[in-house]
Every structure is written in structure tokens, then in C-alpha cells.
Length: 159
Image (cartoon, rainbow, N blue to C red; front, side, top):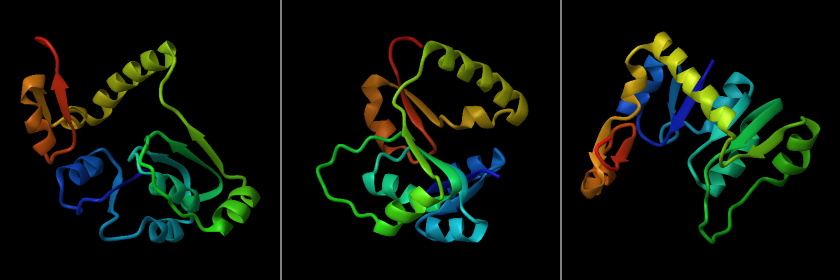
């Protein structure tokens, strides 16, 4: 089962798209993720892409035994964040949890991703296109910042 978490309430376009793709959406404004993890017995894999150092640390408490946290976000803000010492010093070690980070991929990984896009399109139809809800020229970047759908992109050139 796939779970997707976001700060927005459950009735947003992001939540609807997640559910249309077969995932269960959880609003962290409504339910703490640790409560969901407790209810389901923890997660095998947690992929963090928020770019918030506190969220990155919090992923450790969401994992079950042998779980993996993949940190993709980057948080360059100079601030202190906190972590329950037991989560790091006992749970992470004794339950063999792993943490890895990634910022890029080899060319063969990009090629595999493009192949998987085709498989996803075959499986979920138009849901894949809905992930990018707004495409605007770079000179209209303000619209992208104001957009409240799933994802906005800037287009350079005639593309």
C-alpha cells in the first residue's frame, strides 16, 4: 500500500490525484504521520521530498524494522531541529533502519524512469498528466507561484 502525506486538507487536487493513482492521502494538518505509522505498524520505505530538516528527522520514527528513509529534499536554513534520542540511539539501530540521500541519478536511471512513465501511463491513464496542473512560460512565473494545484512548471522556449 502506498501512502502520500501533505500539509493540505484532504479535499485538494493533490489528494484526489494521489487517490486516483491508488495511494492513500493523509493530511498532516489533520493527522500526525506518527499516528498513521503506529496504526499500520510503520512503513517499509519513506521518501521525503519536502526539503524540511525536521521532516527529514521525523521520517526515522515512521519506519518499521528494516525500513529505509530516502531523503530527497534539501534544507539550507540555518536553524536547529530536534530528534527524540531514543528514535536515533535505540530504534534506528536496533531495528536496522537505514537512511540514504540522493540528489541526482546516472543516465541509465533516467532512461529507466522514462520507461516507467510509459508503464504508469498505461496503468493509470491521464492521472500522470494531472501531476503537472499548470505549464506557463517563464515570463509568467508569478502564476506558477500562485498556483495551488499539484505541480506548476515553467517552460523555456517554444516547448
